[in-house]
Amino acid sequence: MSGRTAEPGVIWSRPERTGRGPRPAYSRKDIAGAAVRIADADGLDAVSMRRVAAELGCGTMSLYNYVPRKEDLHELMADAVIGEYDLSREPSGDWRADLLDMAYRTRALMHRHPWLPRMMSPVHGFSPNGLRYLEHALSCMDSLEVTYGAKLELLAMLNGMVTTFVSNELATAERTRSLPWSEEQEQAVRGAYLIRQLAGGEHPRMSAALAEDNGPIDLEAGFDRALRRVLDSYVA
Amino acid sequence: MSGRTAEPGVIWSRPERTGRGPRPAYSRKDIAGAAVRIADADGLDAVSMRRVAAELGCGTMSLYNYVPRKEDLHELMADAVIGEYDLSREPSGDWRADLLDMAYRTRALMHRHPWLPRMMSPVHGFSPNGLRYLEHALSCMDSLEVTYGAKLELLAMLNGMVTTFVSNELATAERTRSLPWSEEQEQAVRGAYLIRQLAGGEHPRMSAALAEDNGPIDLEAGFDRALRRVLDSYVA
DNA sequence: AGCGCACTACGTACGGTGTACGTAACTAGG
DNA sequence: CCTAGTTACGTACACCGTACGTAGTGCGCT
Image 1 (cartoon, chains in turn red, orange, blue, yellow):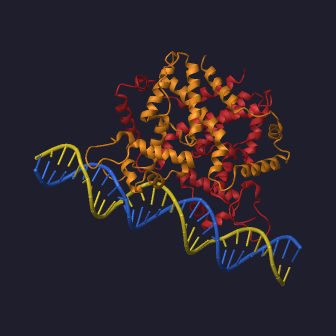
Image 2 (cartoon, rainbow over the protein chains, first blue to last red):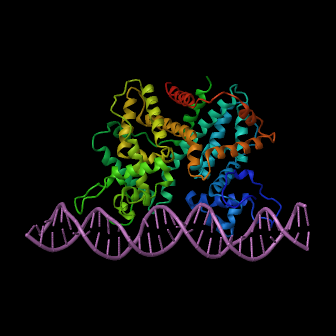
C-alpha cells in the first residue's frame, strides 16, 4: 500500500486488505477494540502504540501496517464507539424529541467512554459510522424546513453542549486519574485554596455563589434544561 | 518550599518568593509569557519543559523550582491569557449586551491563542485572573434576578458554546500545524474521500448538504446567531 | 555576628513516547 | 514460477516528563 513513510491520506481510504502478501492477523475492529479497552480502563493517555500492540499480542511496529499514524488510531477509536449508537429505530417525526433522545444517548456514550469528549472534533465526524450517525440525525429533522446547513449547525451546537456538559461532569474524575494522589485530597486542597482566596473580600459575588446552599445539585436536570432551551430557541 | 517530590497542591497557593535563598531569576509572568509565546508560535504540543526553559535561558530542571508539574505550567498559561481581558469597563446594565460582548472578546482571545480552547476546563476557572473574570461576568448579571448558581450555569453554557464554535473554526488550521504536509493537501484528500464515500448513494441527506450551495459561509453571523439564541432563551 | 537551613540552580539518568528504517517471511497476480 | 507488494518486527533516534544528587547562596534566628 503506497510508500512507507507518512503522506497525506485518510485512514478510511485505505482498503483493509489488498490481496498481496500474508493475510493481516488483525482487523480494524480488533485494533480499535483493543485501543478502546485500554482507554476505558486507564484513560486516553494510556493508549500508546506499544501498549495497543501488546494488548493485541503483536510487535509494536506491526501496528503501523494497519495504522500509519497514531492519530489514525484515534479515528479508529472514535468510529468504533460512534458505532455503538443504535440507529435502527426510525425517527418518530417529532424532531425535538428525537434530537433530545440522541443527545441523551451521546451523554451515555461519553459516560461509557470518558475519553470521548476530549477527541470531539468535526474531523472525526466523517468516519463511516460518523457519516451514518450524521445521516440519521439529519433524518430526525426531516420535518424541519430549513437548509441542511442550518440543521448541521443545530446538530453541532447540540453536540457541543453535550460535550461541554459531560466534560464538566467528568472533569475532576478524569483529571484525577493520572494524578498520584486521591480525588478527595485534590478537591480538599483546591477547596481550601478557593476559600482562602475568596476570604480576601474582593470577589463578593463569587463568595456569595460559594455560600449559596442549593441542596444537592441535580446535574441531570441541568442537562435537560440546557438542551431544551437550545431546542426551543429553534422553534421560532 | 515543602518536600521536593510531587504532592497535592495548587500552584497559586505557593508564594512566589519565600525570603530564604537567592532571589528567583524569573517571575511567574516571565515563565507564563515564555510558554504562551511558544504555544502561539508552534502550538501547545511544542510547550515542553525543556523548550520553555531554553526560551527563558535556564536549565531545564530549574523550571521545577517555579512549577512543580507541567500541568501547573498550563495553569500559568491559562491565567496569563485570561489576564488579557480588560475588565476595567463597568457593566452597562444590559446583561445580554454585556455577556455578548464578553463572548466576543473570548472568541478574539482564542483566535489570538488558538491553543486556549484545548485547555478550557472548569479547573482553570479559579486562578487569580480566572476569579477576576468570573467576578466581572457575575457583575454583568447583577440585574438578573436568579441564583448565582444559575448565573454560573449560563456562563458555563455560553463559554462552552464559544469554545465549541472557535474549536470548529480553528479545527483544520490547528490540526494541520503538526502535520508534515500542507493544509490544502489535507483538505483535498479529505474532500475527495468524502465525495467518494457519499457517491455510494447511502447518506442522501449528507450528499444534499454537501451539494447545497449557500455562498460563502459567514462564520461570524453563525456565532452571533448561536449566542443570541442561548441568551434569548434565558429571558423567560 | 554568624550559623544553619531553605531555597535556587542544574547536570545526569530513567523509563516512557512516536516512528523511521532495515530485514526476513510470505502470498497472490502476471 | 517468479517477483512485487505486503506483513511482521527488532533496532534506533530524538524527544518527553521528572526523580534525584549536589553545589552555591543569602535570609532568619539565635
